[in-house]
Length: 220
Image (cartoon, rainbow, N blue to C red; front, side, top):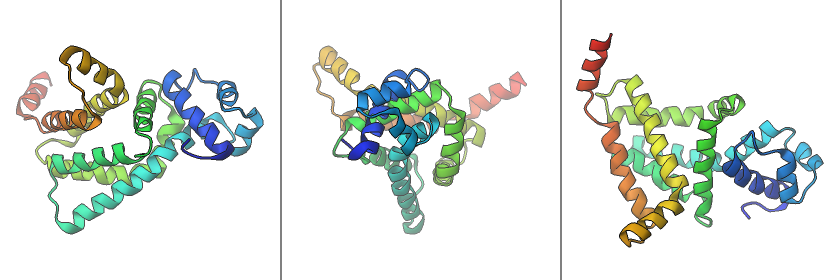
């Protein structure tokens, strides 16, 4: 278990059920039943289902964002160049290493992230903006510095497409490893997969924009 006690049992259960079934489809009753607690405990510790969803994300994102902010500050003060390989490499290492004692929790978090995109939660978007907006704005700045020729709006879309690839790949890690073994007789570790994913993302984000911008002007 990632956290002991009643609160820990509720969070451990909620994150798994939310990741598997989605936010709307997972009832508080289902969470309390599986966690072995009563509904009053959820109300006492969290107050609402929305607050519980926020707490699930907080448990992943707070250590990640603190570590990411520290690494970005280190880049700024030590003169490490803003390349996509450097910036995305930091993000990958931190995302996969936030819970080294339980690697499966990284996959759970990426499944939760996918649910957040497919089942938009207005309260969650606002919560994440308030609590983590500053560090992600700093990350966005470093990404823009790495590809100064990519306009900000185009960078936004490329980052969203990249997130889609990351969420799909890392949330379905076990399935991809099984396919790799069955089709190519290759045992692909998490490190193997992320090493293949990183250059794919770099190539997509820094791709030449001249043709796209020409097409936009023609379309307008």
